[in-house]
Amino acid sequence: MTTPKTEAKGLKRLLFGSYAEYAESLAPIFGLCCFLFSFSLGMGYILGETMPDTAFNDILGTFPDIANMSLPELFGFITWNNTLKSLLFMLGGLLGGVLPLSFVIFNGFFIGWLVYSYGSAYGLGYIITGLTPHGIIEIPALILAMSIGMSLGYAALNSLRRQGSLMKETRSALGLFLTRIVPMLILAAVIEVTITPIIMALLGYV
Image (tube, rainbow, N blue to C red; front, side, top):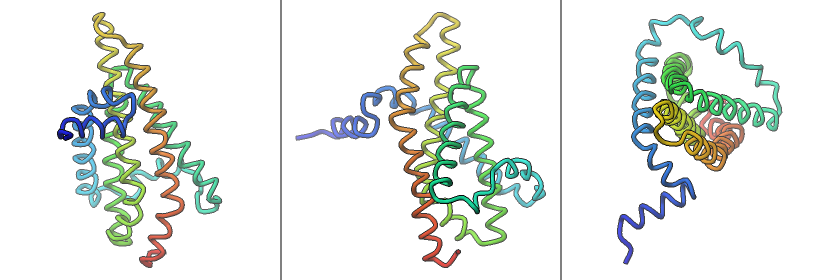
């Protein structure tokens, strides 16, 4: 008879493979990042009314015009953008964990502002339908990457005190990123360019 503990171990192994123990060690940091993301998202939504539409125009202006992209081009852009940014900010955690922490807080606030801004114009149903199908995969993947980055920052500080192995931590971080986070981001991108538009069309949003 299998015990709950054995089943939990099997589930972790299924989800994270040979990096299950490393992923488990990230649980407290992941929980903190989820809280910070949720809090900043809520603040972005609450303060959305007080912020002018031009507040994030510079950021939105850095994105290319995706309206004229083919599906393969859009998929490639989304995958490359999310993978590259998450990798850079994750590795930026080696500088003390500040970069991944700021990534979590800023993106939570930015998404909260987008939800308020576009929700006011098109309704919350439009926003929820447009974000949920791929967001339930993409957002946890990005938060996990930033959790790894913060863990790298902690390992880097420990290495200065000659505690632990920064090289071992970095190998585990890159292994988990390549074998789990990248596939999650690819899957999220596939859903975003195929399934999400279909759902929005069926519900009459496009």
